[in-house]
Amino acid sequence: MKNGSTDVAKAAVRLAISTRDEERAIVEELTKKNFKAAAVDIGGDLINSIPKIIERTLVASKKTGIIKDYHVHEGAVAGAIMEAITQVSPKATGFNFGGKIGIARYDEHVSVCLFISIGLLHLNDLAIGLGHRSIPNMN
Image (cartoon, rainbow, N blue to C red):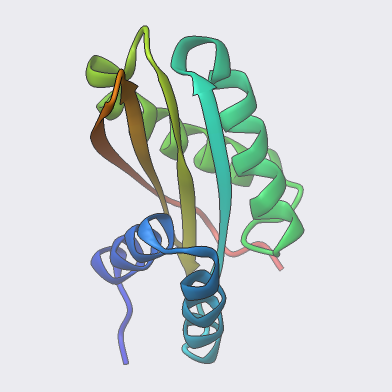
């Protein structure tokens, strides 16, 4: 089975939109297919939360073995989450939000998905952003 960037992106999206119970099953399923995957909850004010979002994404990626402690790996994941943040920021800037980050990797492909609910009084708006990078396998 050839898993490319599209498959990795789909995996990241599935993780980001999942509940915690669903997340465990998805990670298990992906692991059987030789993917590496993780998810992490986030929330707050978007602009003030950007450093924390990047940090949590990097920590989860390293902790679960998605990336190694290499500058090029960290830069790729940081770039992917920044791309996702850029996609949701027009809707979320100035508002509080809560959501989840899904991270998936297969071979040289890594995708990061940011799925958020944006607080607007009694209504919530939703936004999703997705970033992808290619990173070398450095064993």
